Amino acid sequence: MDLPTAYAYPDRPWLRVNMVASADGAAWTEGRSGGLSGPPDKRAFQVLRGLADVILAGAATVRAEGYGPVAPRESWRESRAGRPPTPPIAVVTRGLDLDLGGDFFAGSPGTARPIVITCEAAPLDRRQAASAVADVVVAGGDRVEMGRAVAALRERGHDRILCEGGPRLNAQLAADGLIDELCLTVSPLLLGGGAARVLDGPAGRTPLRLADVLEEDGFLFTRYVREES
Ligand SMILES: NC(=O)c1ccc[n+]([C@@H]2O[C@H](COP(=O)([O-])OP(=O)(O)OC[C@H]3O[C@@H](n4cnc5c(N)ncnc54)[C@H](OP(=O)(O)O)[C@@H]3O)[C@@H](O)[C@H]2O)c1
Image 1 (cartoon, protein in one colour):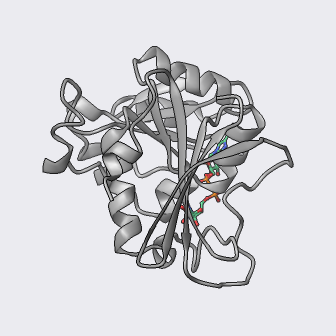
Image 2 (cartoon, helix red, strand yellow; image 1 turned 180 degrees about the vertical axis):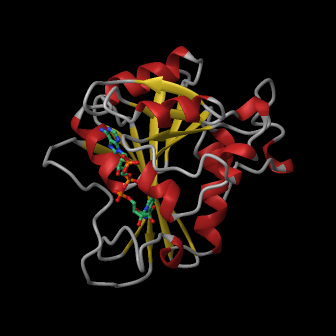
């Protein structure tokens, strides 16, 4: 399947969420998403990264998944023409309990300096320490307001936003009407147990239109767009 074509962004500001879930809806197994994934999903994950201007993630995902800098790929050369070789990662956090000396920050190139999106309630010393290794955006008082966070990314020219979760971040974006598209990979697996679904937060209702369905090796790649998008 020609994923870069299938997943090309529209020519306007767009926020895409990419998640993988088991057939019964679990968003993680043993605390991470890796056990839900497989080679086709990993390929799609990388294609979506290559198309994005910026990757948005909640701090719990960055911690649980051990995020590092995005590695450049030869296959991205065409789709990233005129843009930096890799997209920066913007992490949403209140506590700023992030390894500021670790590879995620220290190993990111200047063209993709990490962005920390936080709020006024975050510890001041941590905000100051973060500003040495990242662009720090304050987008709210007691908590990050998602509309302000997304606006700050767009002000930096990042119109093509790829949100990689997790479920608590996704739920807030959905509640604020900010999700234009959900790319949901359904993994051929039943898990049961208590994992969250791909949205974990207050109930809401966002009508979606099914835009695409692809299949590879039992993995179902669904793409939904918000009804009015
Ligand atoms: N299936 C998939 O495709 C997929 C994708 C991503 C993640 N996951 C899994 O999902 C789990 C993590 O997801 P999660 O839902 O628990 O957490 P999450 O959404 O990744 O991150 C939650 C954290 O983000 C920060 N945050 C969120 N909203 C905020 C706000 N309004 N203001 C300030 N900070 C805010 C807080 O960070 P601080 O605690 O730093 O303040 C909060 O603890 C992991 O197990 C991961 O493996 C699965």
